[in-house]
Every structure is written in structure tokens, then in C-alpha cells.
Image 1 (tube, helix red, strand yellow):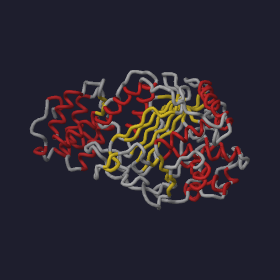
Image 2 (cartoon, helix red, strand yellow):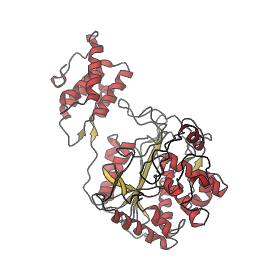
Image 3 (cartoon, one colour):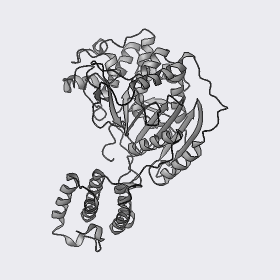
Image 4 (tube, one colour):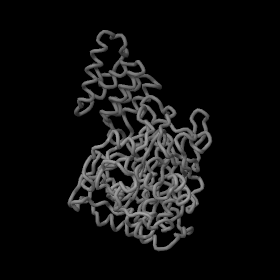
Length: 497
């Protein structure tokens, strides 16, 4: 949403910490088995793509579904599917530049944001394979003077360090300096809990620089992108230009009233990695083939972390239980897939990279609209469709549908449409939070009467209207008591005020 584009985001858990469970509901043993499947592929130096493999029968249905999602405004970006090393689907939807009507290409370069963590984890394990460091080395050995005794590189890799979040994307400060002066108290003792923070991997990048004597960007270019022939992947500093693809613009997530978001402001995120669908596929193949890491290190990347008390932490992500390895989330959907994935967005871009360890299938989604919910819903749809499940398009947002109608046809048309579809829970969902946000957006555009009608419509039809809707509804009613002529002339019975 507007106003949040500066912060790097992943698909957030329901809380910042994973819940440690002695016996997880999903099988940790099965996740480990999935890691073994991946490691088995690293025994050789290369994985020859099987060019004779047939295009999966689900791909035509998937193409139809993605086109429908794009037409409904639920997905815009570039998508790739590969099976057993062979790309079987690659397509782009939408615009690289809305103003110039420059169409998005499937070979465009996107900011991949938090996918950088997968590169960082591999870089650290590669240095370990070379004998340059140990995972149980203390952080203080490489970044001295930080007030976090007992924190090791392994803790940073698995997000179990307890080092607090220090997001320097807006300030541009050095992460170690900001931690030293502003965040001296650990969140928890190392190894006792799980908490995702960008700080853990920012510190690991400093470790890579300390060990190699090179900048993190130069090391990735030399040790990762070069050997894997990732020719269209670039590492840029925040102060050195914008996206490598000419004319490419990163947009904020579309608002409730507009189909296209405003161009996103650029933060101090550093370094910024831009990549393409094909290069990210090469990245997964490189890990799978053992070109970068020893087989034992590949296995370690995708093994679920174990806390000090022996429990395996897990969380809910995208409606699925997930564990964490080193740089990768590990999910086991109900279909029986073992999916390793990561996602993240910043400054107008969002990226998802996931691969099914069982089927040897890769799914990559990149967009320049920073639409995290839409991208992750599309990724889930693709994974289930490719696994042979019936195509089930994500539900539409009633709040967003209503907002677009307010903007294009007026409040009366929007309310009439809402009255006709608010019981259609098979195709639409209604969120109290989204209706409140739509109300705020209407008020910001000096349309308080329309904001009142929107909240009233939801409150009148919701089974249980929450406080987050009722409180602003009361305030709006009080505000408009002295200006009744601002209300629409006709309001359908369903939202009688």
C-alpha cells in the first residue's frame, strides 16, 4: 500500500516469532527427506535439462488462469515455470511503464529484494566449504563491539540470533552502527526462538566482506553470478541509478480507488539486486547441480532449523505451515509437495521464487507493482494447478471492487454492486481492515460522505462488524451530522443510514 513501499517485506508470519513445537503438525522428517532429495542432485557437477520432457498438461490451464487474474487486476508481472531443468512456461503481463504504455517483457530485470537472502546464505556456506570460516564462529569475530554475546553465524543464518531488527533503508546508516547505538538489548537468547529480521542477513553480508576482502556486490558477481552465467543479474548501490531495464518503473501497490499505484520512492536499500526469470532459474539449477556448494552444504541449506531445546519452530505463511532453513522457507502443502521458497518486496517491486523438491519444479514470479498479496496468491494457485489440482482463482476483494466503482461510476453504482454481491462468498471476500482503509482513502480525497456509505454498507451486512469499522463509522456519522447535503441522494435499503 501507499506509504509502506520503503520497507522490505516478506510474506509475514501471523506474528514475528515462530511457535516452537516439540511435535510439529507437519512432518519435519518429511522436510528433511525433501532436503535429501535436493542434496542427491548435488552429487554431480551438472544437471542436464531433459529437453524431451513433455509440457505438463496443466500448463494450458495455468495460462488461462493467469490471463484471467491479469484481466481482473489480481496479477501483473512476469511468470516462469520449469520442470526437470526445462522451462515449460514463461510469460509477462502488464506494463513496465504505465505512462509510456511500455509493455512488460519476460526478460525484464526486477529488484528481487529479500531473495538476496538466498544468495547470502549460499555465499557464507561456500566460504565455509573453502575453509575460510565456520558456522559456529562468533559474530564478534567478524563484526566486533556489538552487544550480543553468544551469537554465531549459524544463528544469523537461521534467524535464531535474537539480534533486533534495525531497518536502515530509510536512514542509510551502517547496520552495525545503528545496532550499537540504538538497539543494544537482544530480543531473546541465541538459539531459543525464531524471528525473521533483515538485520541477520545484513550482518552476514559484512562477514562475507570481512572474510573475502571484497565488497559483497563484487563477491557475488565473481563467485555466484559469473560461474552460473547469470549475465542479466546486476548488483547496484542505492546511489548508483535505477533499474537496468530501460524505462522500467517500480510502482506502489495499487490503491483502492486507482488501478495503478504511484511510482515508488527509492529507499537506501543497499545493495539492490536486479535479476530476471531466466537468471533466477539458473540460480536454482546451480544450487541443485552442486556447482557452488558441497552436497552436505546443499542439504544444510534446506534442513529445518532446530532450537536449543530440540524443538522445530514453525509458522503460518500463506495459509500453510512453514519451517525455515538457511535463507529459505520450507513448506509442505496439503497436496504433499515439499516446497522451498522465499519472497520479498521493496520500492515498487515484489519477487517470489519457489521450487518443489519432489517434482523438481520451479515457479518464479516477479512484478513491478509491489503487490505482495496478489503475487503470493498467484504463486499458490500455480503450485496447486501444476500439482494437478482444479484451477481455483483467488477471491476478489469486495473493498477494492467497491473502490474502483466509486472512482469510475460513483458511490451509488458501487453500493448497488455491493448489495448484489456481498453474499457471494464463493467469489468475493470482505475484510474489515480493507473497508477501513478504503474509508481512509476516500476521506483523504475529500469524500467523507462516500467513506461513510462504504463503512455503513459493510457494517450493515457483516455478520460481526469489528471495532476497527464501528469506531470510525461513529466518528464519520458525527462529522457529517452538520452537512447532510453531502450524502448521496439515493442509498439502497441495504445500507440505510
